[in-house]
Amino acid sequence: SSEAQSSQLEAQSTSQFFSFSDSQKQKDSQVLNNPQNYEKIRFLALTYTRLACIFSDKLCFSLAQELDHKAYHAYRSINDTISFLYASNNLGMYFYADNKTEQSRYWYNKTISESPQDNIYVSTAMNGLAQIYYDEGKIDTAIYITKELIKKSDGSDRCSFEYSLAEI
Figure 1 (cartoon, helix red, strand yellow):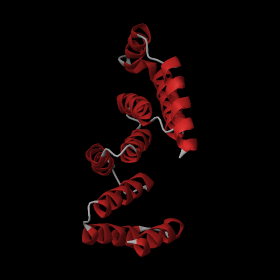
Figure 2: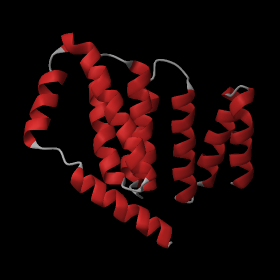
Figure 3: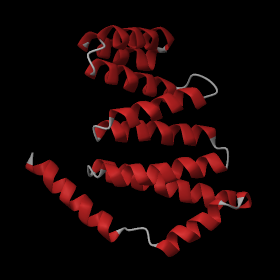
């Protein structure tokens, strides 16, 4: 649509304005390589995450992926498990939205494998994998995953997973 094209052009203009200079990359690297900079690292990671969401909304997925990848590594460096799961799950969504199925599958699986327990990010990643399998025509696998999500879900997510199953 013309609205999507306009949004993408706006995002591309913004991404050209918001470029990562070598000196900025070096400063970020110095902060990230010093674990004693916990608050600075967390702030930097939160900034990357928020900017990634903004660029994703503007359909500028490559920049959203780059920013969220930086956030993922920053969160990992300070052992912020919930936040790096959030970032890895977002990467799965951004790659899926950008029609990069294998990268999306990689990040969804990473979210699941790195999670110490079931949580909303595992459920979202499993739902994303079910969508990928559905798109690939692997309907039985998509149904199986969605039924597993329904079994594990509490009341709040159950309805959306049941809806997903009905659509399959």
